[in-house]
Length: 267
Image 1 (cartoon, one colour):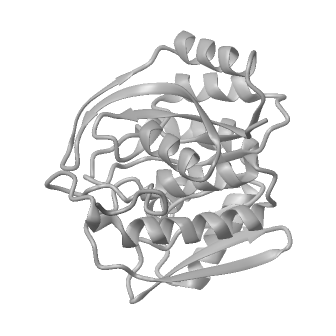
Image 2: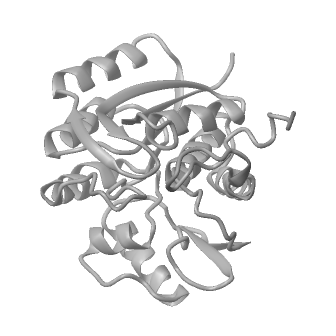
């Protein structure tokens, strides 16, 4: 049976992030993707112009429908919207023996806010305890903790540990918003810290990087990989997708990464 992963997130009409990016990453890595849509967004590579949340009843019904028929082996959580949606998702996942990768989507690449401030407490209280892995970028980690953005690896490590204390089993602190020629991510678990590095690629086409990484990790866990194995493979996959992003030339703003860089052939 093909491994199945479920993404619970918002739809991106531009196709670069959200549900669309997650399903592309699942497919590229050999995993069947199911979805629960938490919100519709009108967006492209330049801006988010409208967000329309799904009702809690619809979110709950989608979760029941998927788990009632499909053998889901991993769940990725992305854009959830307000407190009611977050509570609905938490209730829908409670008691299910499945790894959960939580990407705390708060702000779009365009700068538009996707998670209201009043939803932060719900995310902290209801979802962090369910997270097998939390994957915040540096601004998201700071927002969750009410701290300044980490400016070095020591601060990244401290904030990651603090997020584990808040309930997440493991934390992947993503260094994409830092400066320097090298991008550093830190995987912080019970067994220690794994440092993942990559050259910083000069491209503006990075729309959907966070969604893609967390989905790729969930895909690995659905395939039975350990957390460390899943994160390591996903890190390499994303670097390849960023390096090939300029081949797509999609949109006039922050274009998407190339999810199928290993599958498609030029010409």
